[in-house]
Length: 198
Image 1 (cartoon, one colour):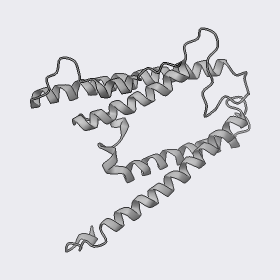
Image 2 (cartoon, helix red, strand yellow; image 1 turned 45 degrees about the horizontal axis):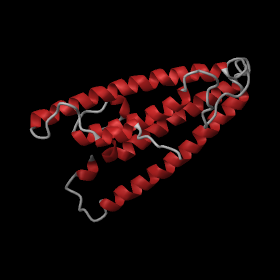
Image 3 (cartoon, helix red, strand yellow; image 1 turned 180 degrees about the vertical axis):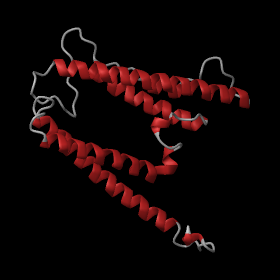
Image 4 (cartoon, helix red, strand yellow; image 1 turned 90 degrees about the vertical axis):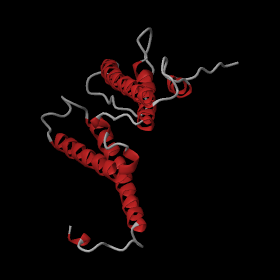
């Protein structure tokens, strides 16, 4: 029989902050502040683990062979499970950010507009701009025969370009749907004098 253990995210959702009372605005503000500090630390931990996972992956692939993969490979021997920890840390960071928004805590600027759900089109546009820049840079690198494969293999470049193309297609579709939804919400609203003039 397999025993399942709750994840840190499940524990966070079920457990109130220690030492905080359930009433009073000061207590709520203090709790939100502590939650934001935890989120900052978790994001730092995520980046540290991501860097360690990258080093581990680079050592597990001979030079010039594709290392990019959508499915993290388990480490061998007694090495820390960096890929699994990275996936778990992403899940925990997402949970912490959601709890921070709910509690009224300010999110780090790197996480986008707050709350992001109210500015979905802005987030989609920001992601699209970044993926377009990534695609252009990778395309430039592909054209530099003096750098390929000394810097990165062509197999890796093709995989990364395909990933960017797929994500951009999804982003553009979602952004179009968001624009249609906004237009529909305002279809029956009369414009104020001079509103269309900016």
